[in-house]
Image 1: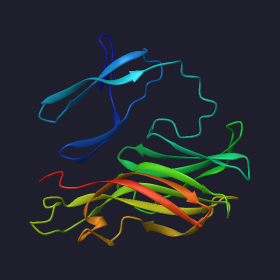
Image 2 (image 1 turned 180 degrees about the vertical axis):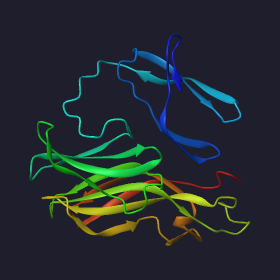
Image 3 (image 1 turned 180 degrees about the horizontal axis):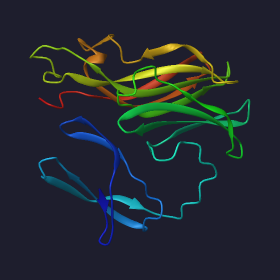
Length: 231
């Protein structure tokens, strides 16, 4: 949870990434403005805290449009603007009873939904997802959506990821701007390409961001890669 001197709020959609990292979501709606501490408690009841980890400031306006299902945990959204259609595309991770999905939804300039939401990842709902990012291709009126989900690995004892059986990889999918029809299939961005003698897919690759490079006619994707987090 995160807590102040007088209140406490528990996180949702908690996902353990490694022995030193986890992700979760906090709903700050209606919470007091000020500094909040972060407290992490393990299943064995041991805990640690980070004083002043969060600061809530300003006034949060009411939601202009609510379009995700109720009674589910929705991870931090990503959003981009389509300058041709004068509308937004919003993406998010939805978690309900251990089932994870990545969704995208078109919104007009007033925040009203256009059409229906569209599923992004082709993997099973039991596979955790996180870190959605979106870019609009102004040349072809197309979207590229990126996100992370784990894949199994098998590495030797001298590999920096020795001891891990699953790591996060960055995936991507293209969608047509007019109706969000998928273009092609899911691709693994952090694939078996070799970097510094190791395959990209043998490490935790998280927090992607991306943009459309109109000059070169391609998407530019960046992400954070964790090396030797265990060793």
